[in-house]
Image 1 (cartoon, rainbow, N blue to C red):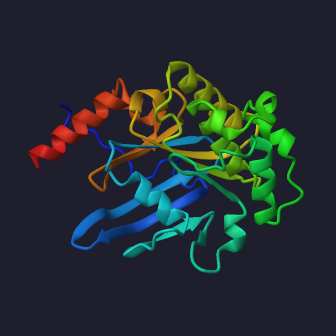
Image 2: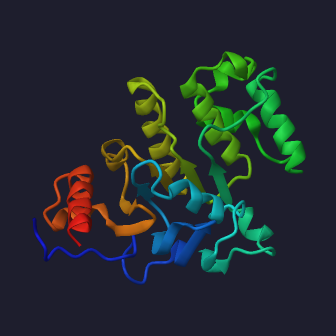
Length: 256
C-alpha cells in the first residue's frame, strides 16, 4: 500500500465556489458519536458522491443539512450562507430526496405533485415538465401504489425538483433498484447535472455504481471523512477504482 498517497479534504479545486461547506461537524446520540468532526466542501457544478457503507453517517449528515436534525457542534453552509432558523431563502435553492421517499399511494403521480405544490405554496411550477424530466409523463395519471421501485425513486427526484432547486441532494437513489433501474437512475442524474445544470450531491454505499457518474467524491467511514477530492485527482494518485481505494483506506485505518 502506498503510505505517501495524500488527498485533500475538499471535493473541489482550491478557490472554487462551494455549493456546500461542512465545517467541524459533530453529532452525538446519547453516548454514541455518529459524526466525528466532518470537514469537506462540495463544489458548485458537477456531481459529488458521498460514499461509504451503511451506517457510516451519510443519512445523518443529510438530515442535518436539511435541518431535520440539529448538529452537536459544527456548521453547515449552502453557497456561503449558514443553515439556521433563518435559512428559508437558502432552502428555496435546495431540493432533497431522502431514502425511500413517501407518497400517497391512492393518488396519481400528478395528484401527489399538485398536493405538494399547494402545500409549498408554489403554484408556478410546471408539473408536466418535471414529470417529463424524470421519465414519468406516460404514468402521470397512474396511482403511485402501482409504481415499481424504480418509478417511485424517479418520482422522489421529481418531488425534490418541485422547488426548482439549483442544488440537489439524493440519499441512496439507486438503493433496491434492479440493473435496468440503476441504469435509468444514472442517466437521469447525468441529465440533471449536464442539461438542467444542477449541482448534485449523492449519498450511496454502492461505490462502483456512483463512481461511473461522479466528478468528485467524499468518502466516509464510521463517522469520519477518509478522503475528498475530484475523481480525476484521485486517479492521478494511482487509484484504479473507488471501491479498491476505500478498502485500502479502511486497511490503513485499522492499522492505526
